[in-house]
Length: 374
Image (cartoon, rainbow, N blue to C red; front, top):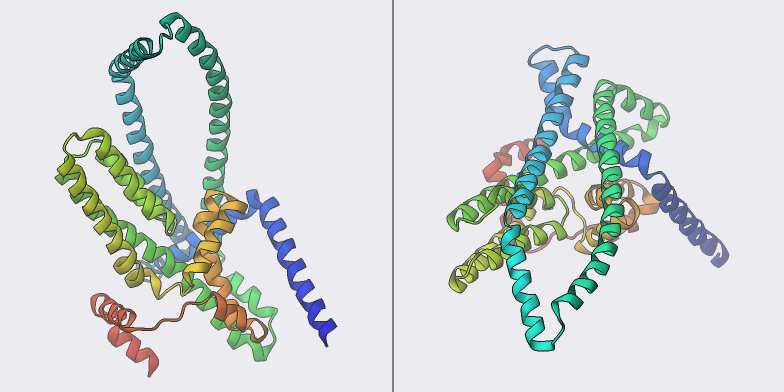
């Protein structure tokens, strides 16, 4: 008995190890494919609307849905890079101020240490040569990484288009491999997995939208420089749970520390950003996302760390909803139910009931939920 349990544990550990190895070495193929699956679940309602309400053919509806996705994502990144370009050009225009500051520092070094300007120039030239070599290497890496991202993005769009066209065929294909008595359970797993992916992404988009409005009002009220760049970056980075919202709030505070000379203004701005962060964490996330991806904070952090280690930035984004899909599979598999319980988050207390009540009230889902239960 003990030996069989040990063999079972060893099998699970070996399988987990092989899965991680496969995910790591198959990243170039799996990342665009996984993004394609999740974006497909997001675009299915739009595709269904075009097919059923506007009576468009499946191919045309799938193409238009994919094109809408391309415009939205491509437009966001175009705005981000255009604002980043303006920021870099502005820094280059201010290089006189930077050089003036450097000259002042160098003169202070001469006055305090006796380290002459000639000696500083010799040391600076040596360091500059090394820095230029490193910069050349980094630039070539950035260029190759940009090409990889562009290819992955195009592959993702192709996958979305093809998945939308063949979405019913994939469903039928999976059902053909299931025995008759397990078809109902399999259908529930597929429907719930699709809903979790769809609602997680849609909920995250809603959080990003509301957060962007709050940031925009705050940045404009304080007349913060590079508002558009900070706003777009702050909204996009929040797609990474926990880490993203923290970075989206930290960067504007650092900019305010550099740009402003008024300590009262800096303090009040920092307090407002912290309040926005608290609203995002304790109101928006539970209201719009929390009930859709019922994972414990511990396993969300594990998903983020593991995803970042295996797939880099893409893993930071994808592994949380992937863990949500895994939890659904675990919950509907008797042997794996304990693992689903471990990953899950127990909803208790008046706080979550209060948020659920207002979520249903705001989104008009109260009556529909009652109809589903009856």
